[in-house]
Length: 510
Image (cartoon, rainbow, N blue to C red; front, side):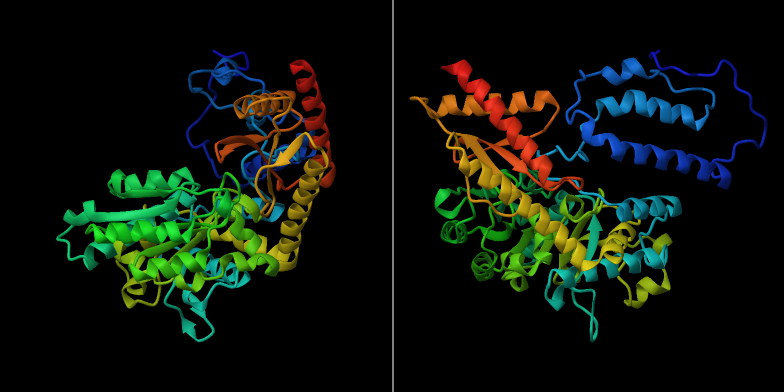
């Protein structure tokens, strides 16, 4: 039994008393929840970004067995404040600079709340026409902001398009469903009987591609020996080299293998490297391979005309995904996937049990979104994305992106101005990779440990949170600007902390 146990001694109930959706209770609970959220956002800046708790702390604070009796809702809110909040890593903090941001907004929170209240399960158009059409509309809106070709649109000015989209939970799901579609197409193309020929299929990505790609290749049944991780280097700023890709694909084709899928990244996790979309698409076309763009983070920046060139060549790829929950003010989970030909996706994922058959689906006038994802059931994700775009408009969303990039540029200039540090790779977007340079005869291995020590000291203060990666065999620190509450003063404050901590570390090593 935990120290916050508030279990009543007796259960006072009578038949018919339990009304979990009583309208007055719903309003009361939500008012308390909104007050909690308001207080949280007003105070999160002052909270330690990383909590100082040990594994298993929560079980010691909350009762270990489920309660038998009901308790007032404010008891749960009290325990949330006293036990849960102190153990949270505060991704909403303006002092959070680790990983990529998980942006949010009032419009997104409201959309998520309303969608949760409606609790629709929109697996087919008939199951929820508005939920399906809202998702399609939101995806077409965002596709227009990104200036994607009409071939990726569900609806065009002249009617129904050949392509379309679906909102999934994560980039992993987007990669998985497109890998499955590419796999099936390659098997048909190579004349395989069923999946017997899967051992001949090969897939390609740079060594900087997110690790989830290699996981979903395994889930899609590809032989790990046929997953090509192509080395990158400083000469391409750690982007995929088309020449190396061509060599790898040609060697496989010459060996009787079937090049099947190429994953192109616009904004890698480690360093924000941008693979050259057009050149890679041209090479893949020679082998009839599926090309997917993973633009999970940086794709959002392409709603700004000055960054749209990073998607040049998109008209020649088969699919593209980005995650508005990273940088476009839309809370988790929200990954948008567009495909140029929806039939290639639904052909691999469609399922039509008798109980889901209906006139609208059989008419061909609608796309049932269940046939573009792994599962059948689905949430009303389109509402929050639509509410973000409807409430803020393109201009405000572009302003948000530009502001974050401007703040990252400020940080980059601060790093350049201190000769103890170096920017490890050229900055793209709002991520700065930096490190303490070796000094006083220090070898690179010692510099790596010094940078790791700097990161750990910074994070222990609770005043900022940064992460690390390895680029070109060197440990570097990642400073990702973009938390929704961040202002330039937070960036400058974090830099001052970094400088002071570095001075202390260096003095200790003299």
